[in-house]
Image: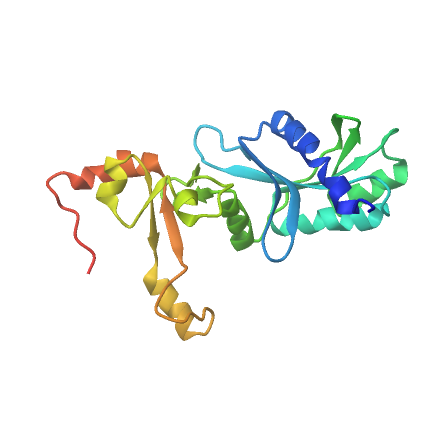
Length: 239
């Protein structure tokens, strides 16, 4: 039975992922990550905020064996800009990319990575893209990375490889500040007012009164900021 093209490409993912982690200094990487719209071959996240910000950059790489039409493959990589800040096409090339390929990539606004054996090399840097916010946050959440509503930092909510919600949220407490402080975890809560507004407008339809409008606070903000409210037991119970 012949090996499928995607399976051949998948053998390159670990090579590109390992290179990405080191080259871009990513603190979190993953392969074959995505939403219902598409999946990213290799995804990485790195800190870029300096001392005064928790800003991160997400980097998506489309991996190809090198035999596909270049413009078509480039278009696939460009599509990742709805998710990520920087997008790359990584292709197997013995001699690198020719002038026309460099021109196409530069015109589209994607970076290029040469794969040669077990080595990778950045040939052309990706410009900065502004992704669709909701899709970018959803993709990062698939990596179990959530943004704190207070400090803006992204933190790990749990095990990104697990399919169990309890394990993906093992580092956050659900709407229980006392428990979050006691266990040195983050906090997740649901914005019911916003959910109700969307429900009335028909923007979100649910079978019951449940809400998907979740927000997060990181463990550091829970401990250093919100734990102060526990002094004297002044935390009001939710009605």
